[in-house]
Length: 156
View 1: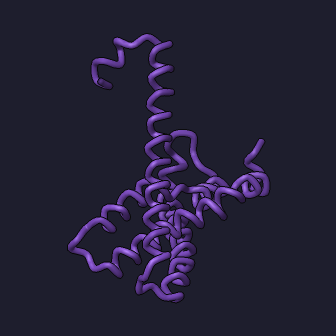
View 2: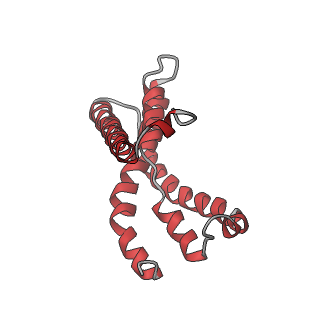
């Protein structure tokens, strides 16, 4: 479609198609979050072998993921400065903090949870870590990113 069909669609139709696909993507992500939430709830409210240490490790992973993301973006900063619009250090900080972690990771965690060849503890641990990171990202990062944008002076 992109190769030859895109030229066959009028601008008005292209705009409508863009909105339809955006809505379909939104619905798909919503379904993934709901299904993951239901599975997490049933798994963790029932019996499992997870301990409080596993929950604390999830908090540690949340912090480490921010450090890794910062290192990767900072490592490629010279390329990011030269490409496109460029990138300032403030934008690196914002990209590190505001990066999404959600639907793709959750769908992969659901695949692991549905795999019969994987030990139940490992399945629960993967669900805990990926679901916990997505939840912490939504609760902490999503609610405070606006304040960070203002603090960094990027809201002009």
